[in-house]
Length: 312
Image (cartoon, rainbow, N blue to C red; front, side, top):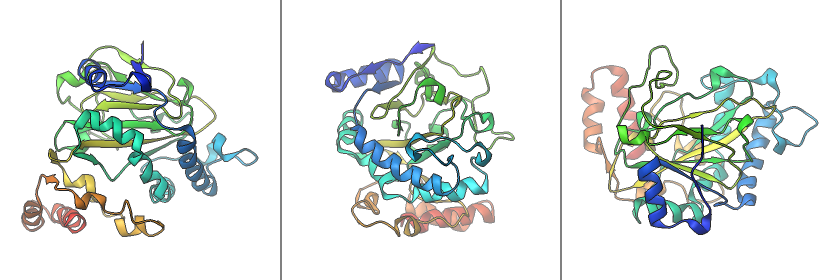
């Protein structure tokens, strides 16, 4: 396995970023975010998961010592309850808007920067193979324009035994690759079938960010430690490019809503910020309205209606 291609903040230029993305499909930027800013988010997340009984008593919650008896993951009901409490944290949503990160991402997409409003938290128990995310491309889950980027942010130092991401170098140049959906909660590229160069990996520390293209094949390495691995995925694109509106909404039947998410926030600054932008939705609002009336099944009609109600 190759070591990550990395840049220090003082090495970052538009040219160095574009060269890395074009040739490798990713770049690891060391020390971009202040560690204290990342630690603040970690503190709020670990408070939630400690209250849920996920951490062993007698340790500092920031050490994330896992209570293995509580091990769970999506789609377990107990995981969903705790994950929703994490997702509702204002600090969880604020980190992708960090000024240092916005400056970097504008180097990739230009000044018309859209920060997708649904960051994904990864709360990974140790020694749980069924919870390990295998090889995939984020475009499989996002749709829209493939010129979109994911930023993976660990909320603590993440040595290899804790299970940081690995990326397949150059895999973005081979387009969208086949994913197996049969019997899987999360679609994945079949083992050994991913097309690209060598895998790259290594330690990723708090403050580092791993940026990669939506077509870059990546996977989590197994968490072989005694601690939970806690990280955030966030996505960025030029808002003039096509955007699947499901990236803005809660399309399922879980009862999630932006109103519930925002209910405990003390500031309105980041609420519905994307509604102020001239987004290029595909399907558009008018197309969503038609789909809500004429989609092929009642379930799909209801799905499109839920999306429309949240983006309208």
